[in-house]
Amino acid sequence: MSSENSTNSSSAPRWIWFITGPTACGKSTIAASLASSLNFKFLEGDSFHPAASVEKMSHNQPLTDVDREGWLQALREHESAMPKDGESRHLIMTCSALKRHYRDILRRGGQEAGDLRIRFVMLDAKPETLKKRAEQRKGHFAGKGLVDSQLEALERPEEDEEDVIVVNVEGELEDSKREVETRVREILGREDGSFLQVL
Image (tube, rainbow, N blue to C red; front, side, top):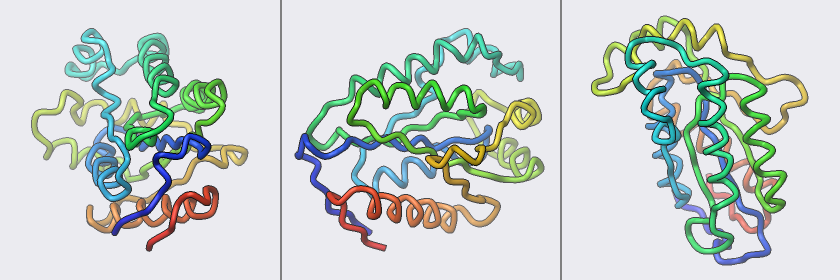
């Protein structure tokens, strides 16, 4: 699938899609696939964590709101620093964004920039599915011991959070990738005339 968009038009809005959800829900894999399909820049939000936070999570110690504050601010600052034209003006980024407060911090970055449209895709799966996937993946600092604490912290989108779509990812990975891409393309086609929807 491909999309045609006016990536060089500075008058068109810049898009940032945050692929969110608890650990082991498939954020990185789905986000990378979506970015490739849409020809958007992809950034791994975990790369913005300070070393102390990575160390905590590697020992199955959940992050606190204070731990996450600096991380979210760094992501927010990166939003505003995005180029206003060229191929890197649209972005797909991973970020757990478990709480409404965290999503609000990221929203404010878009509001301050003026031309940014911030949207969220929350990936949804059962606890047992997340734990199984966390056990199976290799080389990631966040293990299955973090699943329960992240689900406890998770705040599902409220009715007024119209910029969040929830996608069930219990099924096969390829099906989840297609579902996310279809939902995102629908919104891009509906909200931004510079995008040609190809489903």
